[in-house]
Length: 492
Image (cartoon, rainbow, N blue to C red; front, side, top):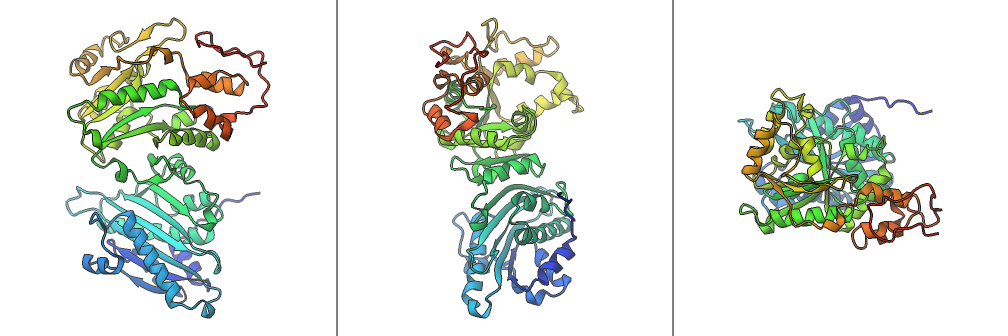
């Protein structure tokens, strides 16, 4: 039976590493002092663990050692990678393996900027470890990006020190359990102190690790509220992809992505790129999946999440996974990185939810506070018509039923073109819903292939996504909705 993991203090972790004769390496820290290595020096026995500790604090010295960065930034992922590779290679070059046959080498590095004196810029940083789990193995690499939330420089430095100890300890003692390693990073610290918004594990011991699932765990465990990964499945730090961009986002379940989803993004994008404050060469499109969507049928199904992500990535899309059930929280997240015009595409049925006052009872200013956050930014909402599956009526901005008390606010947004109808939609796709496609797949029916974008059906079939099984016997009790046109019939 599994037992609860005992949480050690930073000094206990440092001492355990120091007393292990096989662990040996270097520490290189830039920007926030020698806060991590300090724990190892103070724990005792550090001479058997630490080959070197350094801080190339001066920019010229740092460039001379690690090379210049193209963009002139020092708190960035490329700088961290250069530090890890440089320091690790020095260990390999200077220590003869025959003299140290049992040593597991490591290089720890961080480059961190703490809060400025005026407290106008919050701290953040990159932290990583390149390490061996066996002398004959190639090294692994674990990299984190963190945001520092404390309002004091010294407190932020102390928190970085604790996190660094947790990371190094986790790399050597939890590398066989990546999820446990991830959870252990918050030993003796809290989310109020540090937010981890990007993690990446690579190397021989992490060959079976899907970094997209690690991203999902960050959000699921409350370590951050949003993570992004690129079409090739790489975890991306938000600033690297959203900084000073014109962002346009579409929220959905995408289970699976359908022709109506693609029509929404294409037609919404077409309107957005014509906006006079939008640079056509500087647009970032995001497909957003919220935790609420992922938990629609109970606890989060990781395979189901990967199925959705695989299809979106295969279509060349960037995926945002967030804990922002409310749109104003999503817009607040975007404005951390850009002040340029943003766009959100939604079905008109979702607009009624946006104007439902019950969702804003936790705000002192209620719906007016939420809308102040939304529309004090340079935001436009593009409304895709919703076709009622029962009556067939079309819902647009012109006939959307808004409570009379909120109608003046609604009319104001319409008049100022902050809410706009998408008028050149494809009427042939309005009857398509992801749930119908999923039901047809699960019940062994054909015809769903015509409801998804080109090649998506092939991806689903080839990779057996969403439970697709060509051997499934069609369920005679299930009938596809009559509103779906075409020859969608029981294959038998």
